[in-house]
Image (tube, helix red, strand yellow):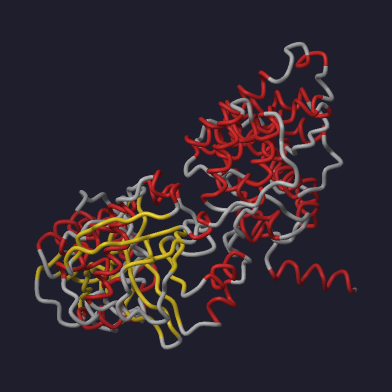
Length: 588
């Protein structure tokens, strides 16, 4: 526990008969604290005379002193008295409380708590409802050691290249072995990392379900089945508490830094956990994937012998779509450039791993194919890999443009077809730099793109204006907004409203700018205030729609959060009460 500070309380009359009992207790909850998992704790205070109880806000264990300050100050304000004594159950807690209560001359006693333990139990039960998901040991024959073996395979897979190279667009088939007693014979699975589904493996009985998922019909996929198996990689605060407790208590391997692998069947009657044989099968799938190299994926079918809790098992996995013959183009290309462009046309119509293979084939026949590098960058797992590929694309694109064109054609650069691969690569490079937190470098690329192409056919101004605000370049950001003053898109009007607030606070002009922003898109403020969840970014959007709102939210780069008072101002002017009042006033 951290060392205590000194809490100031109002001077209150002492009640000679009043005793407070104070305790701290862990909760069956986990919190994200500075990028790590932390058990949630709670401080409680009971007035034994009146049986009134107060609790602090939950916090990590190192925040216990702050929580004690909070609950004591709250008790003093609410109860308007100071006790004759404070009773605690252990000397460590007494050591923390004594300097806090000494100014009020309130002694701390270490004694058995008479009333608080029972109240704590019921209070915690009310604050944290029981998780309906069964624990990991509920499946027949499942032991801690079997879970350890499963967890080790999950951790190996999470750290493997296979996790990086496969996506939800890659349908994987389990050709062997036979699946033991898994409902609906889930022969296929996808690996998902996007926001629309929990991260992990989703098992499917047939390819029709895969097509339903790809078309966005998740609800139809779920409703049309008795249930589905998943292996999720859950954060500690979203995983079943029993799993997290068991992982901590027995030191089981985590996937990555803090992901808890959770296997389960979600059906109409709730969640079931795998039995010993099913868990061993899932362990084998993860171990086989962990041992899978990129060359295995490119082959389309591969076999891996792995050890499981049930013994050695041979897995045959395949990418059925990759094994299907590619469609030939309408005409036979003659030059290397035409061959590469034909392969790229096929790649744009493909999905999953085939996209990567076709783009690589295009580079093999024509190394100066900038768009092939751009396509590979769009499939990259992380911003740094994407950045490297965009740099190569930009270099190739620059070689295709004569040096004098950069000066002579500045102002209508996009009008030349040969410049467009270069401009697309440079935009991707700038976006990757922004993703990596290298905002100044990203802004410089966007500035140069607007010099070359003031018409901004690529819409880079939408990224640049929020970058400039994040860099505290408010004057330059305002000049950019003025330059494109006719642009009423949410990605320009919301930064415009924020800039007004940063300069003037809650002024008439700021409220007018906010009103314009709210008219441009009615979904953005809910995302900024975290009362809505953003749609996944799909690359295209409709003005005023939820997809545009998601883009605006991503491009904000936390500028609203980092501007003191901005979110409170936004909340004040978008609350239901304010809107109702305005409507009533208009009706008059």
